[in-house]
Length: 307
Image 1 (cartoon, rainbow, N blue to C red):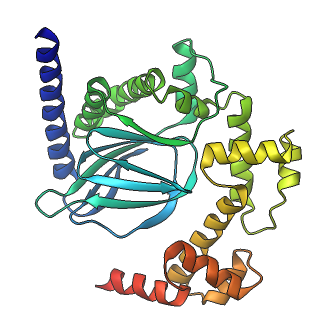
Image 2 (cartoon, one colour; image 1 turned 60 degrees about the vertical axis):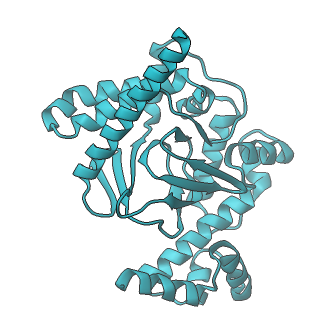
């Protein structure tokens, strides 16, 4: 009986904390969109299930106070809601979509960008060592009361700039500590970049991102990382859920979409700028990722922006 009572008490406290978190986010961001409230601290709101967002998922800790969201990384689909949190530990191309939202109960979320130097500092202070276990750079886990409480306390501090300056960094360190001690600890230790295959994958991702419009020479990257080609492929896919070529292709197509939308380039020119030599190849890849040919997709996006 005591165990059941304790569980009910924890659930009741978490429900209250989630309700307060939703209330505070709604008060701080009254219109749909995303706002960076403090460096690395973002709040988001959406009054209806939004269209798909294609972009980069930077290293972050994400909590939903109300609604739900799906994130696709390669072939893996992650869905999370107020009962779960999401961790991303590398900057990866992904697709995100708000799955549950309404005008009465909008989607409300909190996101904290994870600074590798702070993660390393907390890891060293807590006498933890980097894991050698290979794991994906993104996953979802159940949200516990201590982690939710810390996230709520950080959001409370947003109302007081002076309090935030003094106490915010301490609460952020607590959040990181709890993440390191929790089920996603191995994933968090990727951010420490203290050697092992995960460190080498960070280097590989940085290189592919920097040279995304150039010919991808997997053999050269593997040699620079002191890995075999097959080993590099295996470790890269474990971390990102994509092959190096798929990763580069998503970077290219997302940049091409941005160029057509914001700089008014036509499809052929945008494809050439991001490294495609064959326009038909570019059109096929673009439609496969975004669901429409380039011209139709950009026209649709422009119509949505002006509506």
